[in-house]
Image (tube, rainbow, N blue to C red; front, side):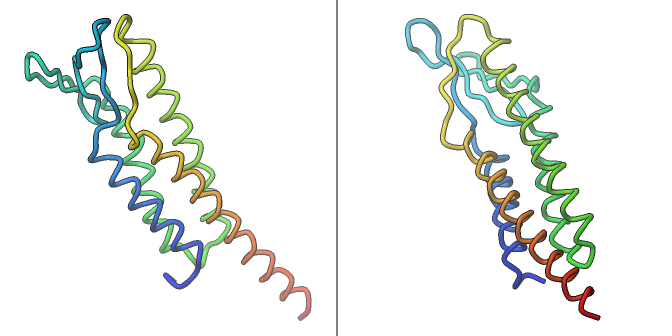
Length: 151
């Protein structure tokens, strides 16, 4: 049921999740301001050695899980209660994603400074879209329940 507004919100959230999975999240700079490495969701690319470290794989796993769940949630339009639960679970996972990003970017790399890119804000937009989809599904559920009372 792609014509429902909440389905469009979930589709937009899925598209933003895929975009965020493929673009860099930010860059690390040393004290002198030189770029040391670039952070992606799946790897950390070191500029001087041209090496890849797969240390941030958990970021990729969390965002991939959220993206797949949100996409599959579009097709559960007959089970509104399950849709709402999955959306709340996705929002919690995105909050966990940001917690893990903060730990990885600001705590684990000591003296390096992290400059996030615009891509790092896309999961927050996914939270807003998931919340709007939740409200649309809740509105549909309340409408169905009010119609059931009239019978």
